[in-house]
Length: 227
Length: 100
Image 1 (tube, each protein chain N blue to C red):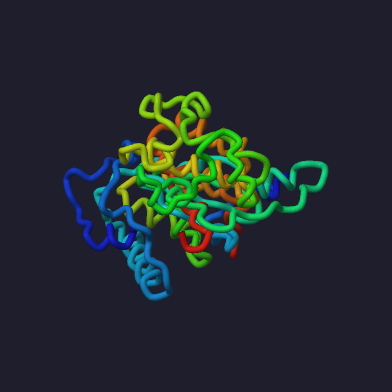
Image 2: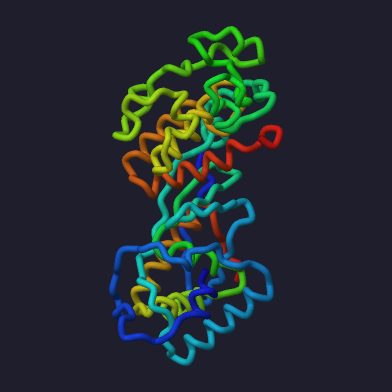
């Protein structure tokens, strides 16, 4: 990122003024920084040299760096609980992804599991799920989870299948429903309470927070049988 | 539980280094960090990810400030103050340490 920006940067009249703070705007340079000794050293040496020479490089806006805590996974919560945590429950046998819990086909041939079609679906426990399924496919996303305008009247089934859109809220909701099912089924990184709280915080935080939640849960929902 | 380390004094010659217990994932305009030991996860925003990636265990705070100032054309005094604040938070959360 930095190196890419530096390579294409130049001194321009529209450069940010000294000390100016501007809203961050996504740019094409916001790709992950290259790692590795070669590019890392070259970049650093270049920057050091440029800085030493007093050269002003780049026209990106400077935005104050901030660190926001988004939440705590089950690992931290368990460690802070006085009694030792119970033995891990059986993990979902396979498919922690939204596609596993969803189906994407009205005729039931899409590959998803029908373990939560109804309340207290017998297939849930029959397939190793803990207790009963937390909700059924027809349960409304709101008010089960904190309301978001795009998800009012949307069922869990629709939400886990993408909700028909690519808005950050719909993407995060898709991952959230799958994550909540995973947490209910057995061992999972986050507890159900944590997931509900994470969603509430993300709704309050806007699209950036929703995207962060979606990304985080997407990375957590990919560990089962390569789904 | 809080594995946070006591606040430390970052100096010009300090060499911040990312913890190997941290995994990162980009999410549009922020960088999500997950500390796999504490289970805590964070979002780095603004120029935080630039500073984060410069915490390579080789660059001093002085170099980082100079690089960020040059990159964004910002006042080094402002960048230094912001970087110090960020590094203090990052170290308090156990996300970085000082390799110097």
